[in-house]
Image (cartoon, rainbow, N blue to C red; front, side, top):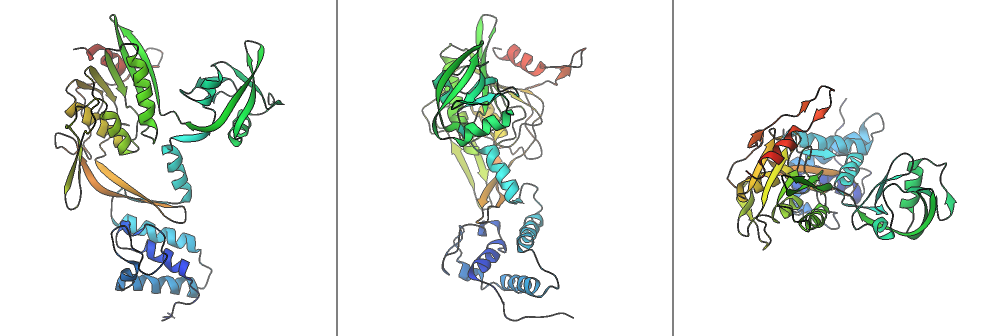
Amino acid sequence: MERHNKKVIGFNIIEVIIIVIISGLTASIATGIITMSNSRTSSGTTYAELLQDEKIKNFLDVYADIVNGYYENVDKDKAIDSAINGMMNYLGDKYTTYLNDSETNNLNKSLAGTYNGIGVSVDNDAIIKSVFDDSPAEKAGIKIGDKIIAINDEDVTQREVTEITNIIKSKKGLIKLTIDRDNNKIDLNVNVGEVNKPALAYDTIDKDNKKIGYVYISTFSTTVHNQFKTALNKMEAQNIQGLIIDLRKNGGGYLSAASDIASMFIEKGKVLYSLEGKDNTQTTKDETDEKRDYNIVVLVDEGTASASEIMAASLKDSYSKTKIVGVKTYGKGRVQQVKNLTDGTMVKYTTARWLRPNGECIDNIGIIPDYVVDLIKDENEEIEDTQLTKALEVIFE
């Protein structure tokens, strides 16, 4: 027998707030914390106005019946997760999704540009593999090949490497690291603090008596622009005459980071990209006075997606000395807005299609390189980087 309760029993204001947030007709409703009846969503609608919508009232009635009247206990968190997922799935857009607290945490970590530490990577034997640029470790004089043997005079030679790194990350301020360098014990004072997480690697290549810069960008994090600027300045100090930007396997990140890097090369006033929304199209142009005048090759593959495709297209269409080498890119021509909800979860929804400077949208199409080159395997079944070889071949053509 069905029960139809006219009154919502056992609800406090916080529960009603959560229900309203997840039951809006558009994803933009899911923003902020409701503190009073005239609080507004990011779209300008008040929550009081939303409650006048019969669909919202119906949802609240059903939610109340299920929570209070179902014959077994209802997990409210899972019920809300399911409701938001249903709203996202209705849109039929694979890029519009609801992320639970674990998925939200993983996404935030992948895009975070900083972490607490000293700025090194270590192998399983606690030997330093790399020292990050401008990091506390670099300033303290730590070098590749050093082995961490003690922290604040506590021997750590018998500890797992994850324990060692966790001990360092848990500290604040100055610590004393004892390292083994060429069988000599050295004490170094290192400041534990906020460190830029590496989002790129760079080097220079000599070819035909010319010096070429090479930079690989793994993701467009919050700090990658500054990292790129530092790397480029160091390479340009070595008088590079061309630059290879490797965006292979780069799945994207922050659009602003990609456009900021592209702006370092493109002339002021030229188009970076356009966003085609529901009601209008907004074009973003380079507003900086910074520009370059040397040849660039961008390396791409099927894993080059989203923000990395935007950067590749911006350079190709608005920086005349750009060539693209590799294979067709992923083809993600949609831009998402991310909203953090009060319970630690997140909604991610598409707000626009992006257009490259020439007006094309690459959604489900991708970017076709100027030189299509597949990676090949040699006689030992090892992958030969024929794409990089081609980039070095054509960069000065």
